[in-house]
Image (tube, rainbow, N blue to C red; front, side, top):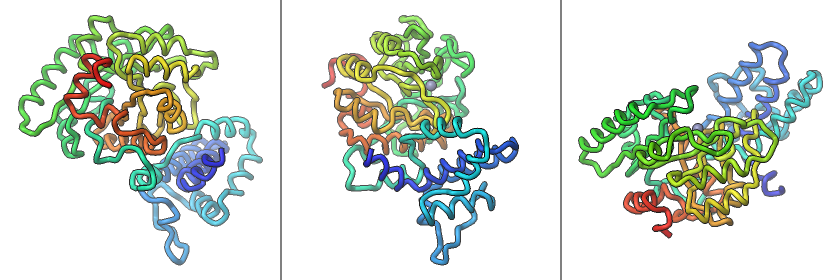
Length: 371
Ligand SMILES: [Zn+2]
């Protein structure tokens, strides 16, 4: 716990962003609530910590989305490490219980500035950005993402990747525009065309993000799953239940085609805790079956975070570090996943995204073949 406290304190942008979120939920006006939420998002997304942005005269630079009310909170945190203004606002509101619940649901989330600091902190072990060869969860125009497969290939090449998996939602997840199997066949042709038309040593892989239903089954048949190069299984429902769902996750991991358990909890920062499970049992089965546990780098997910990831590491798990990008700009979210892996000291050889393509393909064909 002492370690966590000192880490949280270092991440000044997460502290300020958290207070701004608290202040948002203490408002009675919707407009003010949205304003403080936007301000919080702007602070969480800053590249530099606020401590580095203050001038020698104590002046703060203009930050888009930050008005005078938010500036006051920033000043208080920089001066005394906390915000009496926010505490008073919470005390005057009738939302204390809800705000405290939301605070709990922000634990172990890193701000963008903290992600960048962790990536360049040489005292930490774990994977470097240079060791990261490819991203294995992202969405294209074929489901709820915006880029074409060509745009994804270009953007991944620019990031220096050697491969990437496009993992659109399967047809069971209608809300996310899941692909029918006919569309998946069409997408396969588009991906093949990208691979054939490029000289660069880069390979697009066709994956799918299958939805795990209440009983642990996937939203496509075994034969359909087997047509994809990589199958991610992820929970998208029953994410606010308090009952144990270990059996659901164990059933998904035991599926013959599943290679990655993606955003295993389905948590969302400040909003929901996600699936409750016996994580040591989940990690033990994943380790035995050589299935990768994902660290999803979407800033709102950060799932697993470094605390749970270090338990998965002790259990002997493999890891997938993915962006879960829905735009090409969001491919940078892979860095959030890398930061958690560094904080958990996960060696690069346990991370499938750090493997050469041949090793990755061999593991996809038979997880037991790669040790
Ligand atoms: Zn998902």
